[in-house]
Length: 228
Ligand code: NI
Ligand code: MN
Image 1 (tube, rainbow, N blue to C red):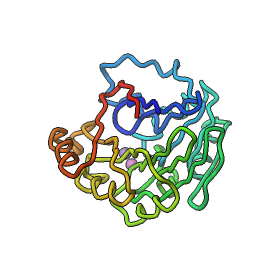
Image 2: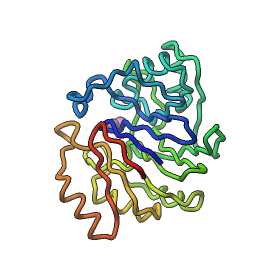
Image 3: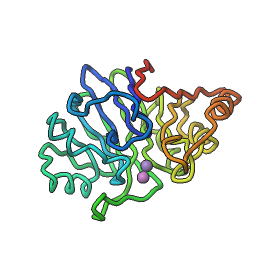
Image 4: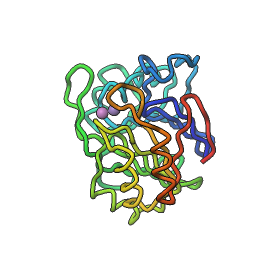
């Protein structure tokens, strides 16, 4: 599967020719300030939003309106997007896998908080488990280490997972390695680190920590596309 990382927790994957964008935070994202990305040229088919914080919902309204993408988020977040004029919405919540063109998605717990940029109620933060004909993956969203992650292998044999590793607001890389055990997946893409002062990490130490446990930690550069 092709994965493009845009820094922080923003990335896209292509499945069956459909582009799926996650937590679009471009405007004000320090990790891409030197990269020439015009959000008006982004034409995703789907946008997933993990929770209401500004570093995740960021440019969702502009990109959704511009592309006509279907936006998938918790009901309260979807409702807020609807109030901003986004029309193509699919609210989801914990409970069951949901069919989309490209495969199934299950919303799972994220141990975090949520709230929308204007102070509106942001509902429970979510992670997403994707089961598709081209591979299975877990995007954890912003989360601390949680026992609930152990449920994921009962549902899906993961090919890779995107886990936050920056600490302070989420797991650090040591907890992400435990999460990797919980989800029975050793192929991890690290996200949500080095964007801001509070989440600065030593990436070389993080990579070595994973390597010593027989795991692989991918740290693509912002703007880089990898095959995973
Ligand atoms: Ni957050
Ligand atoms: Mn965040």
